[in-house]
Image (cartoon, rainbow, N blue to C red; front, top):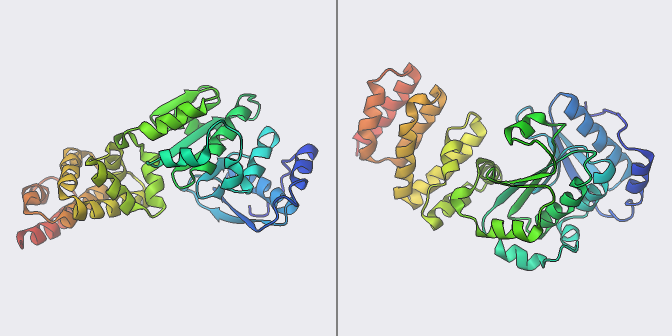
Length: 331
């Protein structure tokens, strides 16, 4: 698949790319993550053509059936699409970096905007190849990502190419911009309205995808600090602690360890909520919840652990409970 040679760019697209040969003058690495399917072939084919036409662009290819597929221009800009035709010019602009994106005239000072953004945010922009209004939405989203690269993560998603993602987010038309899986704007959004919403939101409104981004970026401690600062347990954090995918669950567990050390009261609240859903969890997740009880290491948790030891649970879960109970009994 790495050598897929499918031609995706029209002659006009190729000419546009070639006009950027001198503009993109320094080493420009990008990363494409793909699965072994039609979407993966398209993403690889596009990147191969870009790499052919732009000598300063190098493509790192990663085959991963679990990671979000797409072309990762930077840590916070991701194209889950083949950005050809009307989207190509914005893809090429993103290759120039955040400063170039932030220089677009959007009627707002990028430095002032960046100072207002305190909480991390994930923006998903759903687009389609033949959508005239999508071309007006995309540069606004890229401006936001360029102006606040440490806070704003943007994914540009082709709704037709990834119908499962579109269905999950209940996308019925494009363009649609989804923030933290909670807020959405249909059509071309007002950039000042979006900035106001990002700057003024409650941390409890952060979505699970935003938290996944934090822990996958290695900022589990930052997530714990965020809950400590606002003295609240983010509801999506509970979802992340019991998610099916082990790497994401592990990142949340690391955040819990920081939280238990920094703010034990919040950590105990997390455990109280997890116990309420314990019986509905899969066995591996039950074991991880018990591991969190061990990390918290408070005798107050012993009766619940004992009930698992004596209850109708899988032997593997009961064995973990026995180990944790013994450590709690030693206090």
